[in-house]
Length: 113
Length: 112
Image (cartoon, rainbow over all chains, first blue to last red; front, side, top):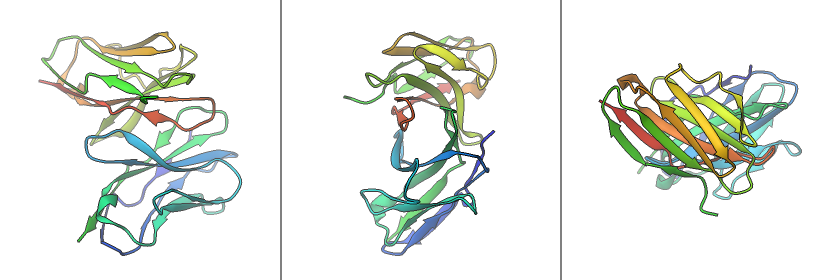
């Protein structure tokens, strides 16, 4: 079964600093990867996804993630964060023909002024 | 489309009572998922449906939990009888084929 590991439960960072949220998945022949964001008292919203093709995927609000097959990683990065990026971020994976997502434990990103 | 709609947003009930959570998926989506989120266990898949048929219910914690999808636009998750350890946020999500899952706002259940 697929498993997803988010290595950092909390990441505090100052506004306009760069950030990286780490995600590793268990090896699989074919895997689809996602990052979701959850604001307080809200549902999860898709931030970006890797299904195939280019290993670097970007979101509309400046986040990017790179699929690294050899390291089984899908880290999320942003070169300059804003206060409004404060939220919990979940990495998720889906393997092969499976339809259900397996989620990591989440990383709380707190952007400090 | 209004997205995945869940009701109620908040539910407070007494131990032993029956609780029913409701979900309306996005029109045209053929997969529906029920997840539970707690501080201790994170996001857990409880059950999912494809074309209204339950495919995998291995995540349902025990027989007190049941889920139905009588048609393509409605699903329920029922807990009977409820217990304090069932307190959590329950999310419904839907997707189309291999696309991403879209989540509802969740139902925050508190069992006292």
